Amino acid sequence: MAVILAIAIGMLYSTGIYMMFRRSSIKLVIGLGLIGHAANLLIFTSAGLVRGNPPFIGPDDKILPGEPAETFTDPLPPALILTAIVIGFALSVYTIVLVKRAYQELGTDDLDRMRSTDS
Image 1 (spheres, rainbow, N blue to C red):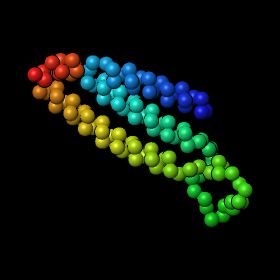
Image 2 (cartoon, helix red, strand yellow; image 1 turned 45 degrees about the horizontal axis):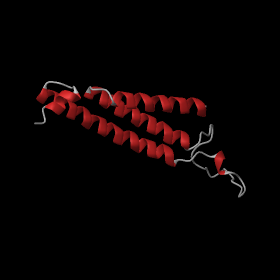
Image 3 (tube, helix red, strand yellow; image 1 turned 90 degrees about the vertical axis):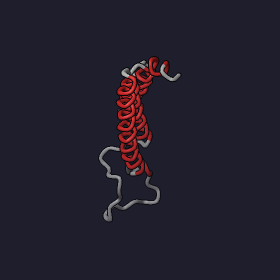
C-alpha cells in the first residue's frame, strides 16, 4: 500500500511541476492544486498507515507500558491535512480570481504576453 501511495505522490508532484512550467496561467493554478494534493498525501503517508485502529484510546482500552505506539493511529497528521486542505482551497480561489482579473485586463492568459505588458 505504501508503494502505491509513493508512486501516486511522485506522479502528482511531477504532473504539478510540469503544469506549472506551462505558459498558461490556468495550468499554473492546476499545477498548484496538484502539488497541494501531493503534499497532503505525503503527510498522510509519512504518519504511518495503521488499519482498523481508531486515533483515540477509549476507556476500555488497556495499554501496557511496553506496548508499541504503532498499534494506534496518530491523530495529528489528519488534523494537519484538514488544515492544509482549507488553506489550499483559499489559495486556489484567490489565484483563480487573480487570473480572471488579469485575463479581463490584458485579454490573454499567456504568461509571456503578460510579461511583455509590464513596460
